Length: 181
Image 1 (spheres, helix red, strand yellow):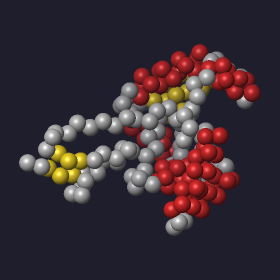
Image 2: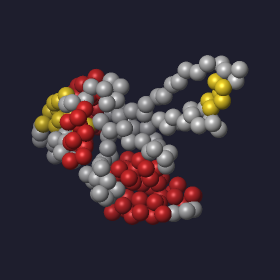
Image 3: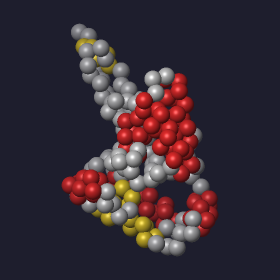
Image 4: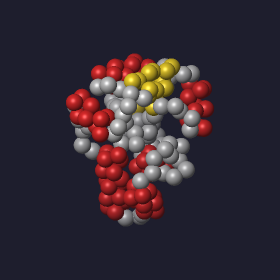
């Protein structure tokens, strides 16, 4: 996935092209859903204010966030940590963004077609192509605003053989964890 550009003047142009008229935009955040989520929300709000967005940060309790997530009643933006428990793109992109999914706020016909194809495709290369095209559609339309890719770091002792994964999946089953004495 290509990195997203930080370009305030381009952001101002895009806001103008989109017809933004200084409407209030809320970032609803908790303190502790993600590490530094409140602080990141405040930093993002300031960056948005710098390009002319009328943004307000609203701190909500975690239980309120869970209710809003279930009922789809956020009044603005919120933090999500879209990972897959299975380590498969279907669990992140299609389960969350697909029709009827917990984050079904956006529809794109080709994205939906590719998600349905990829979900049931057994040929791994075809699945990879479908998901790559879905990523390109995602990057063009940005139904989510990617903010960060968390860096996971782990400390282990010299007598521990363990290999972490690149995502947040924490696997300590026998084949991936050995104690050497």
